Amino acid sequence: MKILRYTAVLLFLVLPSLALAQSVPAFPMAFWGNVTINGSPAPVGTVVNAYYGTTLAGTVTVQDAGVYGYTDPTQQKLVIGEGTGPVSFTIVSSQFNGGVETGGTNQPTYAQFTSGSTVENDLAFTVTVPSSGGGSAPVTTTSSGGGGGGGVSYSYSFSINGGATTTTSTSVTLNITPAGSANQMWVSNTSSFSSGSWVPFQSTYPWTLASQSGTQTVYLRYGSASSTVASAQASIQFTGTTGNTSASTSGIPISTASNNTGQVLGASAYNFTRLLKRGSSGQDILQLQQILIAAGFLKIDAPTMYFGAQTEAALKAYQTAHGLDAVGYTGPKTRVLLNQGTVPTASETASSTAMTDAQKQTLIATLEAQLQTLLAEITALGATTTQTQ
Image 1 (cartoon, rainbow, N blue to C red):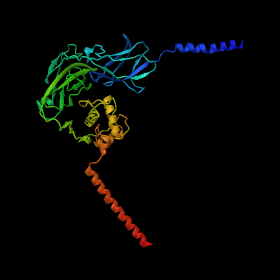
Image 2 (cartoon, rainbow, N blue to C red):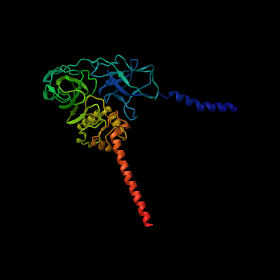
Image 3 (cartoon, helix red, strand yellow):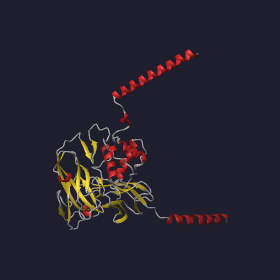
Image 4 (tube, rainbow, N blue to C red):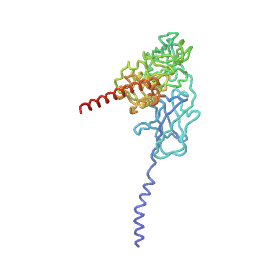
């Protein structure tokens, strides 16, 4: 009889727990990481979708070029609900595949849903880049617009160094007038726009040509809401020498010699006064990016004047190289360092502080002289003490 009572009590306690366990739904799964299109960071505004077959499981929009989700638990991720089968990913970008959703020729996938897991999963898409409309000459042009132009005519102009035909420096100034309501632009040394990203529109923009002799062409996309509305290109004949030359952007000479020790001459001429972090923009971002590019930490063609994920990562590496906390923003200590104009290159390690043989000999001679002086003082002190006694 007691056994029956105990059994009844046990069932009374266990059965509700089993029912509750069966009713608990699966927790969402989240992905984060980088996203590239044709080997370059996906532009801001790119939509990344996740599917179970043809069923949409989750979606996210790129906020920083090349990043669709972040490791920080408080920041954006691509969250999906429970489903069966592999997860496949697609993108939607006005700059690729005519703005039509695509998984590319190598559509990324993930094995299966795992309840509650957060996964770092970099996505790489390969898609066909459509030809874009827009002006092609560095003179005032009327265009039907590329990308989202939709037949609207724009009058605009794009030239290099005020329309000059030749330059002896790879550092030039782009002169740009807007195309209609465009408030963004994307500049590249290649027609495929294989690097860079959208930046706020600027009528004058410092740029660095490809380091090679001959005719250099710069390509420009006008944008609105990260969509191309028109495009143009301008050319100039580079008559300078390649190799160990000194380029200058906005009056700041940058050594490109092969024996570069990381010193950016004149960098201290710009005074950093405010905290710069992801999302910041302006002239001081341009100056910061010039320093990081020259030092080899920031791998972009030219400054964008926008502090995105790439600039943050480069700044962290720069801070680590100087023994500072890699916080990824310009706090007081980092600003003091930047204002000194000292920039170690990315290839420098602790051995970068090693002295030359001549410097070593000079230091040894100095130390020996100081030691001899100290010994003489000790000897004299000992003689004085003996006489006193």
